[in-house]
Length: 311
Ligand code: RIB
Ligand code: CA
Image (tube, rainbow, N blue to C red; front, top):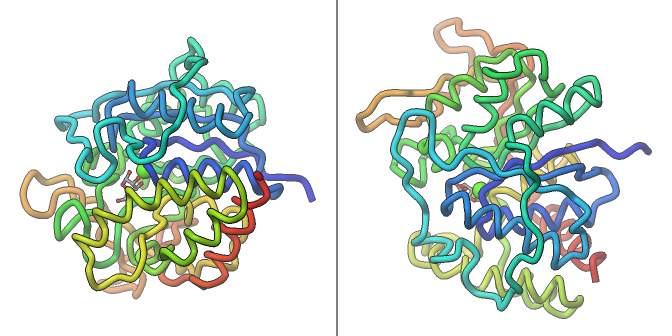
C-alpha cells in the first residue's frame, strides 16, 4: 500500500509531539515535512520543539518550516499552563541541533502541495493561521484533504464555548472551513474519549526510549488534565487522534456536518457551531465531516504499538 503523504502543521506541545512520533512510527503515512505555528507556545519554541522531536527520533532529514507566530487578527495567547515554559516541559530532551529551513511554512506548504499536484493530506494540530495564509497567498496550492484537530460539537476547553486551536485564530478557521476543501474536524468530542492512562504510559515506558519519552511527556501533560478534568481517567490525545484517523480511518466515527465558526469577540469566540442533524435545512458542506466517536481501546493499542516500533 502506498503511504499517504502528509504534512503536520503543529504547535508542539506535548500532544503534538506524540502525534509526530505516531506518524513516524506508521507506514500508512509518509511525513514529508513539518510546519510550525505559535499556539501552545511561541513560534520559536514550537519550532525548536518540532526539531527536537524529529532529532530524537533520528529523523532530522524531515524538514521543519516555521510559520506564523501570531494569529491573523487576535492577540497571541499561549498555553504555558498546560505545556510549560518550553512548550515541552517534563522530559530531559536535548536542545535542537538543526534549525528550520529558510522557507516560510506557508511557502513550503505551497511548494510541497504543488510538487504532488495536490495529492497531500494536511494535518493541522494547532491554530490554523498558516493554513489560512496558504489559501490566501497560494490559492492554486490546495491539499486534497485537511484532517484537523480542533473545535467541538459540545463543551470547549479554552472557554466553555470554544476549543483552543479554533479560539486562538477564529478568522483563520473560518477561512479553512469555507475553503471548499474536504475538511475532517477531529474535535474534543472525540479526543476526550481518546484517553491515555498511567497504565498505558507504563506499558509504553517498557517498550524503549521513545516509549519512555512519551511516558515522561504524559507525566507532565497529565498534571493539568487531572486538575481540570478530574472526571476523566487519563489524558486526552487530541493531536494523535487526528493522525490516527489518517492512519486508520475506521477508528473514528465521522458524520457529514455543516460547521460554522463564531468570529465574535464575546462569549462565543471561536465556537464551532456544528450541525450534523440538518437543522434549519443547513445541508452539510460537501466533504465536511465531524468526528463523534472513537474506538478508544483500539486507538490506545495503535498508539502503544507504533511508539514501540520506534524503539
Ligand atoms: O485543544 C487542544 C489543542 O490545543 C491541541 O492541539 C493542543 O496541542 C493545543 O494546540
Ligand atoms: Ca496542538
